[in-house]
Length: 334
Image (cartoon, rainbow, N blue to C red; front, side, top):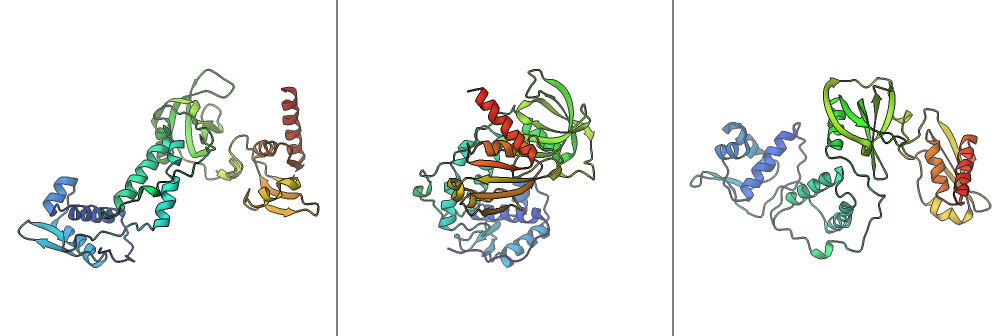
């Protein structure tokens, strides 16, 4: 099988490479493409000289065995096993790819499903026709246990994403967790966050005149307006969200969190990185000390509670109080 040379040249425009990929596809499919055919089929406006330059790139930079057939009036490969080596997947990489395929099911009917599937289609299209993936590689022995996925109204994620990129104000209806009624709002989306299967958007609420974090499942009738906004120069994402700990309930004040885990949790705790800049060490009695800085005390309190007595809040006092109150509520509800 003929393979393309490793290309060291970096193209300044991704459009050039997209042209070359399409030309390669047409040649490999035996379409004998020429300038007129390519322009007609793809809606291009290439001149013959420009196409000639792209053919030279194929030949010189990718090592393509490309020639022109004057009888069929188009280009062809003298070696029909040649392909552009955009992506060469080793068996181990194919195995890894097949292993994560079941993850798609966790994102069914969510905004990420189409993105994942489009990516898979692109990867498959990049493989040469002569590669056949053994069905044994499709891994049925690996499953992913994901958090429950929240349901979004159709079009919400797409419009929020577009507005975030375009810096356009959104007009939408939103309800809070405590309110059953939707209210018409205007919102400037700054940043999109996915936390444990739930989608959120951080931005400026016109009605509150403050930065707010809104849950996308509570948004409906989301429309992009013609109004434009600018993100304040002093805006810092890390002042509103702790990526390691979570998004909800964050404040601007940063705390040094100190936690002690019981001896029985030692292996589980020490084999993981819980937070960037963390300090973790084993105490003489076998327990584990963990500390890090965060603006997200409420999420840390919930995290500590998830260890069901295996973790103890040492500092700050505000965190200890949160854990105590949460424990009291649990007892009262038992």
